[in-house]
Image (cartoon, rainbow, N blue to C red; front, side, top):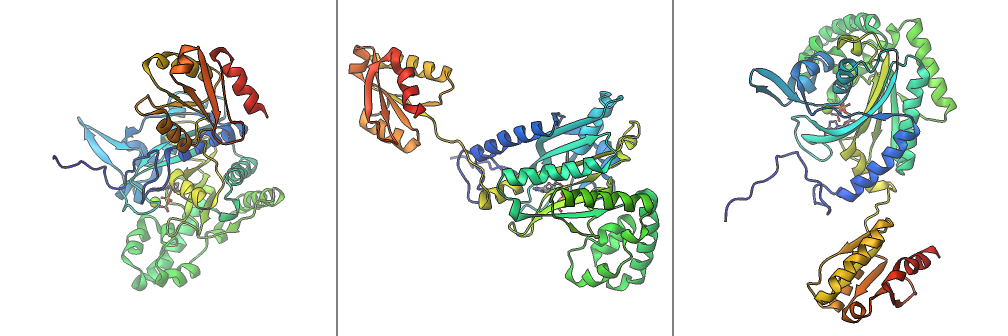
Amino acid sequence: MANKIQAIKGMNDLLPIAQKDFPITASFWQAFEQLTIQWLHDYGYQYIRTPILEPTGLFVRSIGEETDVVGKEMYTFDDYGESLSLRPEGTASCLRAAVEHNLLYNAPQKLWYTGPMFRHEKPQKGRYRQFHQLGVEALGFAGMDTDAEIIAMCADLWKRLGIANQVQLELNCLGNKEERLSHRAALVAYLQENQAILDEDSLRRMHTNPLRVLDTKNPALQEMANQAPRLADFLGEQSRQDYEQLKNILNALNIPFIENPRLVRGLDYYNATVFEWTTTALGAQGTICGGGRYDGLIEELGGKPTPSIGFAMGIERLLLLVQATGSLKTIENADVYAIYSGTDAMIPLLQAVQNLRLQNIAVRTHGADQKLAKQLQRADASGARFALIVGQDEAASNSVTLKDLRGDKGQVTIPAAELLNQYQQWTEC
Ligand code: ATP
Ligand code: MG
């Protein structure tokens, strides 16, 4: 036998069954998608879909050359002379499309997207090379009401998924460009004073992305990071006021948060509000959703200045959490399991089945490969509520048998034309 070919490490198949190292099933994922479509509709967001490949320059310019995502994790290749990359996140593409198609001409936009993202990271639980995000972008909204609304929107989703008490909101304010630059100068000076104790990552980031040094997970550097100059002390009046206002609105909406002055996020384009939703239930991969303001990014990508804010959640991480502790219901079972025996019964059965399906009744079929009794066992195991049976006798008399597999209704044999009536009677009560 030939060797089996296996999927790329860190890229998962989504299957009808749970896998040992990837327990999320396709129907669970679909239940999530159904729920989120309603949720996004409730908040007035419109769907947008962009290509998975983009010119590499889009990500370099938006996410930033010195970030881990662009510097180390992107899948980039030469396409006959043009450098292309698999998208590592969704915001850049979404804004590229909004600018390219003039969506923002005198009209703010609330957009959402979902789909696979690609990062060449070390695969582990909750960290994959192909993973999926769902994100929203509110483009052309300057006020803190929008910041509060999109945070409230997340809080609402956690409730709908039954994980509200498993997650916490971390919040920070990154200020504007000038404020960040003056803080950066003070920070670099401080890091230089402490150069002797810095690890390799921190030494590299000291000049490229010093704020990220404060985000270090290295226990030996925590004290140094705690004592470092704080961005909060460099914020001007407007930034401070905005941040206070956002916290006031969140309090008024009963959304608890933790201020984390060291929260910086991994992408360069953020300013002012940044936030993350984290959990302790998933081990090291604890961030299920992150977002913030990116007021300068649309201009950076060739559009007019457009204050904007968005977030993206990692669907795999979120669903691992929902599966472990949440309450998302999956609709897996069919309403009816249809079985027949004998060639004469095949067409009457298929006619009856199609009539049920026209009424949005879910029917599963399996062909007459076994005796009726065996097929009935299979119907029972399927979880369907009813069995629809057409045997030789039914076929001869143009009738069908409906059998209640879960309740106490027993079974009836009725003219085929009365099937729908009978089904409705039995399901109404
Ligand atoms: P982390 O710090 O965990 O690497 P990040 O800051 O790189 O996350 P973002 O770029 O903000 O993540 O992406 C938003 C969300 O997408 C994350 O909060 C996480 O839930 C998810 N995510 C990011 N990278 C991965 C990955 N490699 N595998 C699975 N989910 C991911
Ligand atoms: Mg990352």
